[in-house]
Image 1 (cartoon, rainbow, N blue to C red):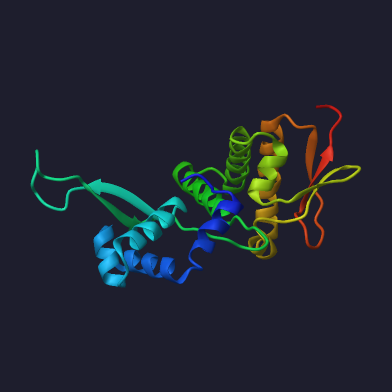
Image 2 (image 1 turned 90 degrees about the horizontal axis):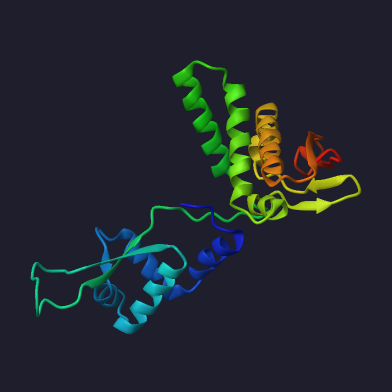
Length: 221
């Protein structure tokens, strides 16, 4: 599943603040199989219309998936319309303040380690290449570099020398495994700037309370 914007993730979690919506979600989550509107209404003691409204709300927010099928074996004329069924999606919704992307770090590191095991090549070299390729892919799917940086959680701010990244999406990992994660970060951002063709040169410049990489103006681009 593609990474959802922070606003979309917040909206999904906020939908569960409603007591009835949360009860519907919990019922579907603990059901043995997909749930029909009538079953949800009966279990929660609400009308079918109310149950349907909350089920569709959860589906719209990406918390439930929908399928259509008949609940009996009859087919042909008179068999009736397929029922709309709901089940909890397998994809998690994570919201953090400030924004963190531990899923991205985990995917990059797992892919790199797997390749290193299979090929016998050095892990660090593969981590850097994997991160660079991911950076190019991120900008390929974004309208511009600033959108890509913001969507990845870096919180870019312009300065006289370039861009400061006010947030590290891998904060806890970077504190514990500084060299590994800062190297990953550097090559991820190189991939992003190269992919966007942006006039910046990523450089390691660690400082408290921001990303360890700064994007410096590069007049050669």
